[in-house]
Length: 158
Image (cartoon, rainbow, N blue to C red):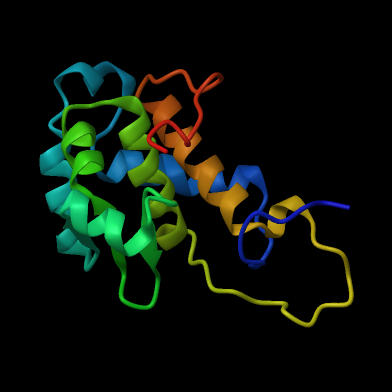
């Protein structure tokens, strides 16, 4: 039986996630040829024009609220992604693990994650796992901009 890592959400296959991730990259002008010159701070600021808030929290405040057990949080109801300052600063510089964190959280929003199927009689499957879906979204975005993800681990900052 598949072990869920996140909320159970509507199933989505990798091809559908890839379609959404690539459309995101196209909408924001992201490609592997532009990665070296990309101003990620400008990209993050552009999220607000789509109603998405990127809330950057002081590192000490983040640690006291989360006990440093997580490196990002997404609230789909308010379209808000909250991250510690160290993640934001490193992502603006193009650091791959920090970018992965932000793109993962963005995946939750752009894939429309809302918990469902709480009382389902069927066993969960991978395509219903919000964390797997968000990881897949982030991986596809990173590969689209030229980052090799085969050996990446999202627990780098933990």
